Image 1: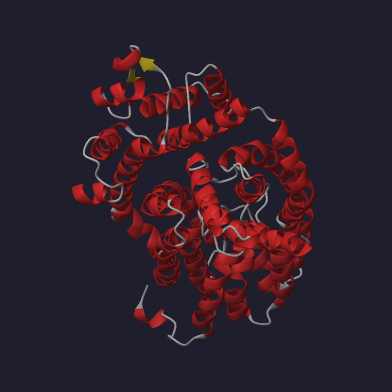
Image 2: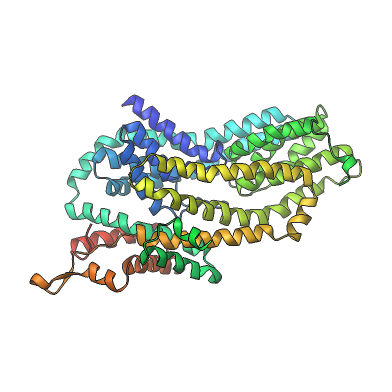
Length: 231
Length: 277
């Protein structure tokens, strides 16, 4: 359990590597985090599947500029953890993953707002003194430790204390609620696609949206083939 | 820029570009709300600044302070601005009459247009295309799904990063002029958003799932509502669901409440036996 907790922490740190290690290499997305979490827990295939389902629900969530709408890493890690530990798949991923990731986001924002200015002030001081080496170290390590390590620790705590607890709660949830959550997992991609369309929609390209839809829905053209066909 | 002022291919500054390139991957560590990417920018500039100003503490301090000013850009395009900043810092060290205020002015003028293209083209459109490419494999539990996703996204963006830095450094201030003269970025971005729209359109019928246990008629002639609907208009319900969420977004509903509403409707619908797994 302790080893797995540490490995879960490592997965979280890889996920946050989105920002401090990969230059937005999309490693925070559930499509990547799900499989990694599944691998740690010994259920790789389930991890990939849950990751794919969560990815579709969150496909419209994009961090642009200063807005952080959702903490991708914690919802991906914890969603997959509870999907596997309760054996309830995506419905458990939503029941436990969503509220816990909101909590992680809150802590993350507190760190951003109250603690981050401290290392920035230190970097300002090193800049004034003309000390590039110290500035580099403070920027990288200060940033990483303040912005991401607390969230990774929270995720480890949620895993360590939450797994047994969540299985007990799941036992009390009525069947129709559990089924309803599976129904929700089918509907949530609509939320993802709607957010996406809202963001990139322009009048001129609406026909292509419809064309893509028609090709897939009526002619059953595979998703990737359809744009290539028209290209 | 005249050929004679170009630096030799093995100059210390040019060699420092390699470290700058690697630092563009890690510069996001120090992002924070007030000055956003500023600290990361100074961090990424450091190897080049050391090559340019060496032991000149005063100049180094001025340069570092300069790059600690507010900045933000889509990460993949940061190397382009870094390249121009490095070329200009080099000019600043060489030329007494150079106005260093220009360095930040150019940075800021590149920030807006590059971020606008970067956020919509790279972070949104290109990512969706990669998701569309790999999601079927992932749904089937195939381990190559996530690997394909990562490679499809990161190989092109790494190439953009590498050549962006080179281009920014070699073109220096000319870059801005060139970018506004040609509309190559706009045309790529237009084509990519068309591709992205088609992928989204194709994913709706494949991945939004709405099922209902309701049947029409009774006894032996009873027909599933969903099957009947699909014979008339395939995937009507997924489209309606997507349109409903778009309407909520348009009405500026809070995103969290939309999620809650979807989950509530699903549970209620299942309880009333209108919806089913």
